[in-house]
Length: 158
Image 1 (tube, rainbow, N blue to C red):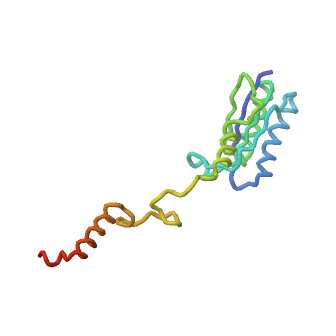
Image 2 (image 1 turned 180 degrees about the vertical axis):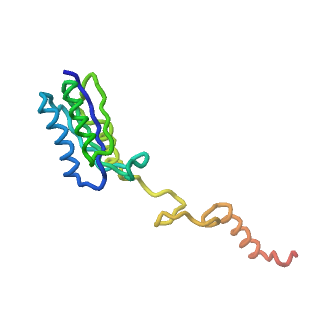
Image 3 (image 1 turned 30 degrees about the horizontal axis):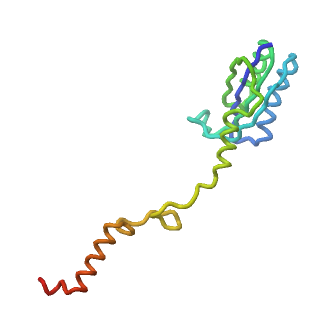
């Protein structure tokens, strides 16, 4: 049987359990027609590139399916009728990878890189940048020069 990958985007107002129920309904439609689910990933609540039906976020779910074409058409019909589904996209693939998708592996990388190292110079503890002349070398040098001139009686030269 052919292999497919389907990404389903569910409304953000529903809970994760309800988003899983949407995926369960799609899986049940596939398995009723003799298909099988090879991979299932929940990508989480993510921002959309643009508003869809007044929603700015959505629950993303990836399904790797091994099913016949009529079973896929029935699953897509049921997803179209479901009010909680904003969008879905099905693509035929040559093989379904067993390793995590790029989205999940990128999330794992973000968790590992949470420590950003020491704070850069020129910033206060709060992270706010210093003022215009605070901490800059040329201003410090100029102020030191003025202080030295005052010590040696620069006023007398004038």
